[in-house]
Length: 373
Image (tube, rainbow, N blue to C red; front, side, top):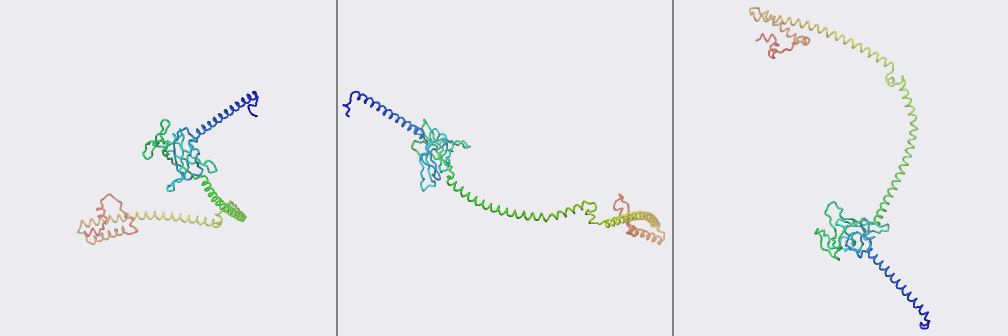
């Protein structure tokens, strides 16, 4: 039905309804635009579109589990984002180059001694990058990676020049060295290989243990038989020790019977008596011999004095007959010969004096030599 055919009241009501629908659509559109703006703002905050970003890159052995858009962590916080993961040129030694950015203010913690650690994010092979805090070396020769002025990056530290160089947005990223352990799948493969070897060794060990146990059973059975056989031996040893403990069962009486013991005692007593008598006889003989030698020594000394006196008189008085002289000389020779005899030599030992050696030698000369002079 055409609008001009409606009554004024219907047209008025329809106009109000149209205005309400228009307001509702306008409000819904505004709400949708506000939600979209909030989403874009939140996304910008999350992505760091309004923050100053410092570019970095590192080299990895493999790009498995790492992709663009993943968060880069610093001290456990999401402080950056991976921008690209690409394979390196074939003529280079590195495998994968990973570029990422660190948001403000987290790039202030990244110094030239910071490293990128690749960590596992789960059992499905996912990994993430974590940058360590810089300035932790023992020496004080550490520097920030970027220089900031007025919330803008104006300089980058050069390792070759050991100074800050000018840096503008769009310049090359700053390199950080990576600490990359083997990926989880490689670790699992290594673990499986180790488990296989370990299981093989465990099976061999169990087989050896089974053989050892069976041998031990046989040894214990044989040992039980030996114990049964040794009971009689132990019983005999016990009887022998009981006999040894008795008054008539000692080992000495076994080796030396009673009769032999009495005979040995009698023989020892007889030998002791004989030795005592022999000792007394030797003592008496020694005493008698000493008396005899002393008396003989005195007699010989008297005879020597007599012959010496006669010799002196003959030398003074040359008118005495030569026979007396010869008799005195022969007597002196006899006495000197008796002094040199082996049996009477000890009786003529002279006592040592303090006389000079020359006079002692002159006195020891024989009367024959004196007569010759």
